[in-house]
Image (cartoon, rainbow, N blue to C red; front, top):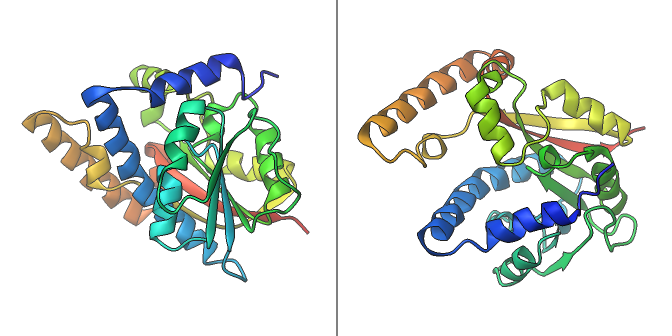
Length: 251
């Protein structure tokens, strides 16, 4: 198994978080937009716990934008991040609402067992060659874990152009809901709550730079939201949604 902290993967993220100029600002806005929805998902799932989580850790926290968003929506009294990219650690450490950020090797977290009330793996596992060890390690240090991934085992994402686009941003797995349940079970966890999201218009239209592209994005958002409203499972088979679940120790 290739380490999730391999030099190749670290280099990819160092480059991503070191982007300058308009490109860097645009991708920063993109991450901030996505973080709003992801923070809402974490908040909704964390509300299912018997007690509100006080100490929260995000594994693979990137530049800390989700940790900051979690502070905004009131998830946790302290928020901590772990990340393999040195540049991302520096960026995340300066964000308001973020209490600490540490670099780790991608496999072993420098934290005691059950050090946190809640662990968060948001859009991380699809980038990892073998996601099970990282999920197990996160479950070791946290009493419960929120996992979020895109569900790309669907008709739309199976198109060659869509598969290439997914691979270009480092997606190594095409999950469906059952895959995530099986992964959690293999890590000794059970899914206590779950949700999925077809994403708002702002996300679909973010990279639409022309009037025609914006119109197409708007139409896509309406159609997807409509099918999702009728049947979440049918929507998941047709196109990519973001899926999040609260995983707790089994038994």
